Length: 198
Image 1 (cartoon, one colour):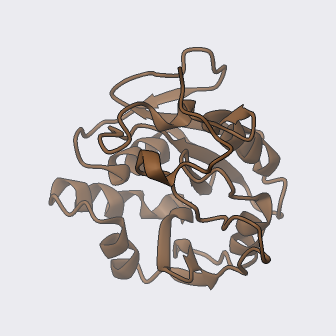
Image 2 (image 1 turned 90 degrees about the vertical axis):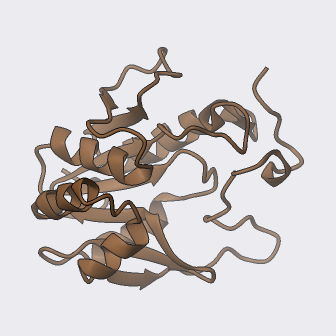
């Protein structure tokens, strides 16, 4: 059961990316004294007791005591992790969290949960546009996700459009506060107070 709303919800953390631009597993980066993967695990645990970690093809987090989910389809980006997570969960809904947005909060997902309906994904929108890695997915969409992967249509943006997702504009952080959608893709994206894994 979701801790944020009265729906059955599992949470999956997407941590299977290649991190080519960053140069090392991004989840191991320490932000404000805590690894990003641990920050996301805290967030996931605040939303549900049923938490999974998508690891792609490599496990960089052997110390975590949660189910580790490998991709069924390789080298297709986040949609491969989404598909694997959807295949693993038994609840009607799955929330996905990226491992590289260290300032995401439970309130963002609470806003998404308030818009959850029946069979449409619910996706956050920031000032930059659609944020498909911050989203809720009904289990009923798994066949469409798999069909997209098999057709080599790997874009989550495109999948959201095809499934007519519900878009939720998220209130931005206040002045002086980091955006919840701050994404760490390159070393220069790292906040000044953070440090790379040793």
